Structures are given as structure tokens and as C-alpha cells.
Image (cartoon, rainbow, N blue to C red; front, side, top):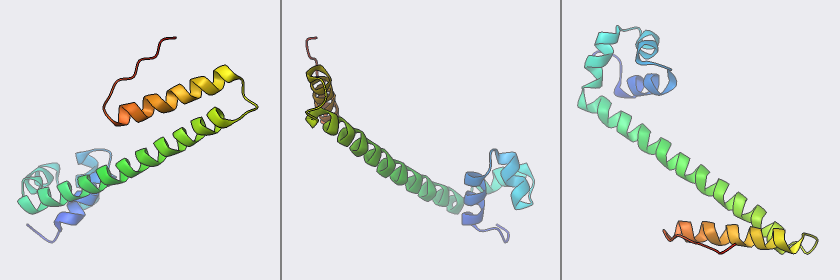
Amino acid sequence: MSALSPREIAFALFSSRSRTQAAEALGISRATLYRRLRHPAVQREIDRLLECVRATTAVAVCEAIEDAISALREIATNPDMKPEVRIASSVEILRHLRAAQGQQVTFEE
């Protein structure tokens, strides 16, 4: 491999809309990029970055779920809300908790 590091190649891929655009950003041909992508060090760097993206996404999803459940809890415990709205909110909280546990929840309407 030339002066381009595996990290530079991986970052170019992640920050470009296409492999053609990544190759242009790196100043190499598309064919050269494809050859570099077969290099184990580049593959390891791509895998490392993908794992970072997955971890970041998982954290963001967990935070969004916590926010949603907090909003539902506020509705469920707000005495100014209609009882049917509070019950519906409570049911949704239970659905989310059961789903997180991998269990299906069915409630008769």
C-alpha cells in the first residue's frame, strides 16, 4: 500500500456518498480504491469504524427510548389527563417493557 493509511481510506468511505467520490477525495482511481479495500488492514479499520457507528447508534436509540418512555410516564401519571389517555399511555409503557424483554403483549381493547 502507498502513503494512504487504512484509516484515511476508511474515513473517505464513511464520509463520501459513493466509492467513486471516496476515490476522488483520496486522489486515486476507483480501481485502486477497490484493490485497497481488499487489504486486511483496511478491512479491519472499516470493521472498527462500523462497530463505532453501531455502538453510537445503539446509545442514541436507547436514549430515544428512554425519552419516549419518560414522556409516556408523564402522561400516565398526570392527574389532569383523561383516564383513557392515562391508561393508553400505561399500556404503551408495558408494551415497550415487554418488547425489550422479547415478549409479546396483547391487551383486550
